[in-house]
Image 1 (spheres, rainbow, N blue to C red):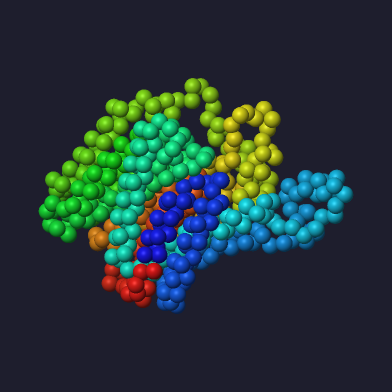
Image 2: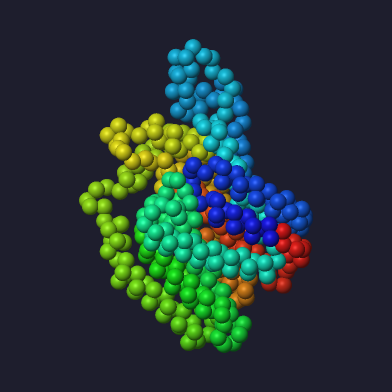
Length: 443
């Protein structure tokens, strides 16, 4: 129950990347009971079994803390790009004192606190038994359905009363989020789970009619149409590989035999939804892709971000410092009425803020993900393996989206991402192996 409560809190109160301190604090407080319960239920054999991914998780948590260690003037004044700070102190007739590696220690500390919900979720999933993991999957599907319905009401209302955030994409479908792109990410994350759960019911019931299957068909069509209405360019582009991988996983989940009529109905439903989107939403979608001959803002700014990241190597400027750093290096000729407070490329932003240490942790994570995904897709069909395959697709969708946006800068998506990672981590365990944590009650 603690894990489901955290997931609900994250979706309801963690859908923005800025101007959300109070709501984020509520999510962080909601994560504490799950964090404590998960730590109490994980024993030494569990830690040994999951030692690699827990080491990566520990490094993720340590990075912002390392950036908050006070450094003497003899060290920090010799770090790259600190000359301006020294000059500013001299102009104010002040002597350099001890300070942190991070240029914005307050934001770095908030970045660390924002890791509490995803860390708690990941550990909580590791402490769960397989039946509880199925509940998580259905909860994700239900929450995404509610978000799409809320977004539809937002669009139909014509006002701002149903929008949950002060700074938001007013007039667009955003659901529980401030940014429509992040609702698109949630749709992409949920789609593989709905399809896998529906296909799994075909295998378990010998192809007989099952409610889970039709729920999967309904949600798949709803998500595809929803992506068209949301008009997220990245979401529309990523849905094709996500759908293809999910349908292939559905074929595995249904038993790898000759596709049944119901499985073909699932494919037909997805195709009809795509056709409906192409008929009714193709105009607005093409308008979103057409920049009218002007350069795309984020593409213009990426070389500036790359130059700044290289200037702050090898240790970076500190988590949460992107906005301050970019303002200090933005060329005068690019200034306009818009703001660019995120890199719209999480890999570039991570490189700028954490340097080579952050990139090393990222490579370690990608190595874990590749290995676990391969193990999940090689395994025989079962409900647990089907969820692992769905989780691998969801993680891949978020990683691809992160190359052109910042979905993991919102606590809601980060917590969903951590849940998927927790599901995938068990892919290296044989089906007959059950750790002690799985025999205990779900936190």
